[in-house]
Image (tube, rainbow, N blue to C red; front, side):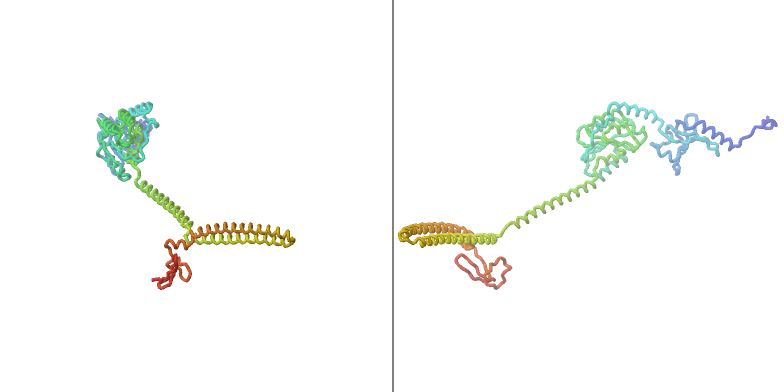
Length: 444
């Protein structure tokens, strides 16, 4: 029977292109973004960077495409047979009539339940105060001994050792090797944490591993491990995964580092900065020492200037002696002049009163005055002589002649005192004045 020859049929026929276009519009309008779970198969990663694979279950499969700008955000490396959950959009490729999924994001199929468990544990521990910033212990500024709790193989331990060696190689590193993934790894981490913290030997502890999926990092979300970190007495730095990865260990630790390398940088001072600070302190110390020396040198120069040469002191004392001698002579002269004036005055009064009787009386009185005058003069003269003798004795104490009596000599050339060897030359005739005479000498 032929159904296409009836003359009454006026239905418009679709072209293949228009039909596929209609299917595409209907599919993409009715099924926008969806979540779908399945098993990866036929996975291909060409040089373009895009991923092409099929998602299947026990009965069906569908083609999938995940472009490069999306798949670089996936936190694990998918492989054939992995169970995954995709957020995708149904698309229809008209030229081939294929229906496929354009994948926006991908996670392990088990990550949904793990993420829920993670969030529930996070809320509960936070409510108990395990994340309270006031309980965090400060990191030491320059730790000498650091414990490393991580896998003994892989890039993490190499990065930690390399960073400490580059920044501050004096830090003593001790590895407490532990499994960081899989069954029993959480218990292993807890055991090694107790070992590192129990003896209080270390200044800080780094606990961590490299990046991975939520399932790979699940050991660091263990509740017992979180409580062990909270109760530890040693400051702990958590360095789990990459910068975008967060675990319970990160929240409860005293400090969270974005990466293991960042953790090593937190606990290792930069040796170049330390060397620079040492140089600055050395320069400051040298400057202070130099300034101190300059101050004391100025004080020494002042003291040297204030010192007086013995010859200068002798000259000053000789000048004072001459002044005293001059004052003594003037004093004696004034006394003599005074008494002479008095005598002349009295004599004049006697001459003015010439009667004989009065003259005799005045003669007697004059004799008395004369005796008194002579006694007074004699007494004054004796006092002045004693004073003069005392001054002479003081003068002799500082007299150059007295110094000569102690074995010193005064060299002279042409009646000038020689004060320096630069004032004579070979063959000059000089005189040495000693206590009891002059010695004539020749410079050889």
